[in-house]
Image 1 (cartoon, rainbow, N blue to C red):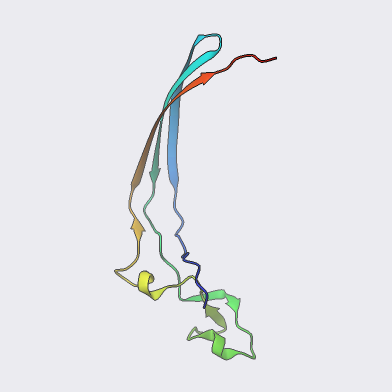
Image 2 (cartoon, rainbow, N blue to C red):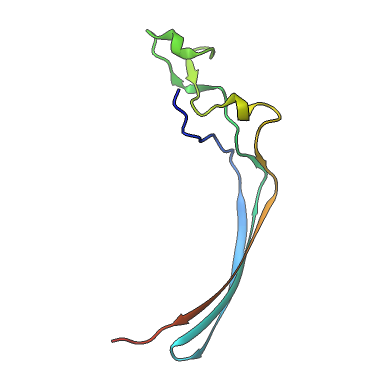
Length: 110
């Protein structure tokens, strides 16, 4: 089966906020300072089921089932090497900070 390197990422939440201060000391000059903060909830990055029950296998080709029960087909994003217990990648309570500064020159051309 073709594999493009992607796996299934579990659902997660990203909560954050940002604040900035902008000062315009001259008519055509502006300074901006800001910061942003984000928290990402814990989630698995490589977690898929071996079988995809939402996709059925053609009845004239039962060999396409590949060990899946019922009429479900194998999930092409499932990789036993990275999706077995002890091999999964997991994100745990990630915190992201961003700090930025900007200078804007806003001349009037017209």
